[in-house]
Length: 221
Image 1: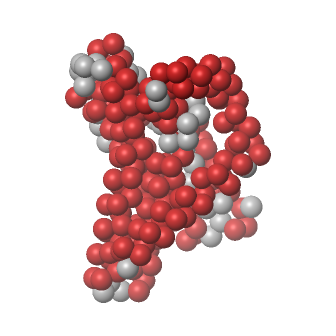
Image 2: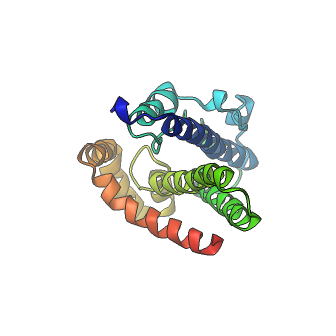
């Protein structure tokens, strides 16, 4: 494993880790900002409407797992931040609407970042930068596109504790939502764990991530 750790791979891994930290912080900040706009300032009062990664760090998901990936595969493609606290009873208007908007804000923010990185990719491709500088810059931008697409798609998987489970629970018609909750509340996390252990989660979401990435690349180039 360590024989494959060339200086270039370590540099790319650490640079990508910075992109991951920014993307996770943007994701959690989007949850907090949306909740605040809807009347719940719980996360805002805790300083979570911030791009400072320190306020969002989960030691295992933000530090240990990504760094193990850097020293294993060279690129961190999996990570998570500390969940954003939300007190839904503070929402103005419909509770269901508030839950769906706050939950969906995180994945939507990563899609927005993926588009932003795609715009940066288009500019970089057309700017005529030198080949050496261009390779490093393009690697970082491409990592930004891939990381944010992966975060958006993964978090919309409708299994607890992912954002998609909240969107499904509060967005489905109530009879369907009640059936969904009866299954997912006791078993959802175990289903997600089984998908991770078997690698099936990759089979499920990777094709969609690849399709979205190719679509954005075609737009950029």
